[in-house]
Length: 152
Image (tube, rainbow, N blue to C red):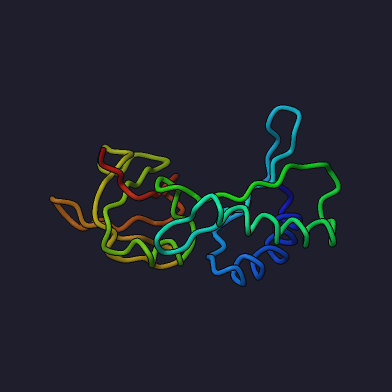
């Protein structure tokens, strides 16, 4: 999605999402088959229910229809980001401090491209995890994906 289109959608949707009692997480705009899909991700403590997505979708849809920021025809979807979503912003990292995360790197560090450990610190430029062996600091530019570790 064009950067300014994403910014416009976020500017419209974020206050609506917050007024409905949810945290605005992210927006994606992608072509799926022949359709464009605009997905707005929401969250809140305790999780998101289907009814919550419906409520937010109706509120956001009305505002998007009024302002009409996207020229193409699209399908609006409001969704929970899921447990395995990547950590992307300061809110995500703050929420996950003290929890186990998986870190995937673009290039190997000490012979590995994947690490699992407790997220112990975050700055806009680096993250720190504690593994059984040591504490490791990664530059955020080196990380391909950081998400909560899921045990099944």
